[in-house]
Image (tube, rainbow, N blue to C red; front, side):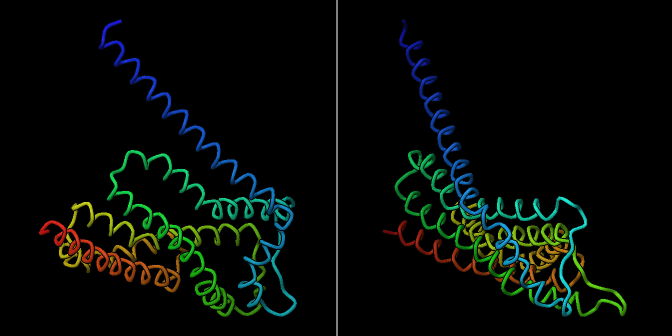
Length: 252
């Protein structure tokens, strides 16, 4: 066998090894979600009640939610429990991703990647917490208060779940903006001053994203757009710090 053929075989084996490792890490990630789901399934009704509490607290006295679909009382908590399991497994899933890509990173990239991974998880959870503890109370109280006379506010549990999951995901992803801005600046794709000069367009873009990802009311859209703008500014601030450090290291 020639040296070229040996090299090709080694490359193939290396690729196969990487694919096997990727498969194993994907299976571990799926298994972690499955184990969490099995652990939480018994409490699925309690989890749903907890998520729906901000709405239940503002409904008229002796009023509750309804289930239009006969299967909703089972499948709505079931679906919510799955998503809760997925959100809770996110740190472990990111760890598996990190373990897969870490061998191919330089030491300085590893030192930066670990805080970024941790920050991304914390920010995602912070977005969900903001939506639940801050947004939900205001939004549901507003919607209930503007109901016309003679209209009974009795939300369907499936409709509420779709609304809640959409808001959780939208705010979780929106709170990742500082990470995205920081990475763009760190990689040299954009400069902090360039982003600052485009601030008016960013503000408009935040409200457009808020319009697309939230229900069609200005209040909810603003509750997403304004934190996105603030997080954008935080990303620029952190980007300026890393640029100063890069410049200082280059001078040394």
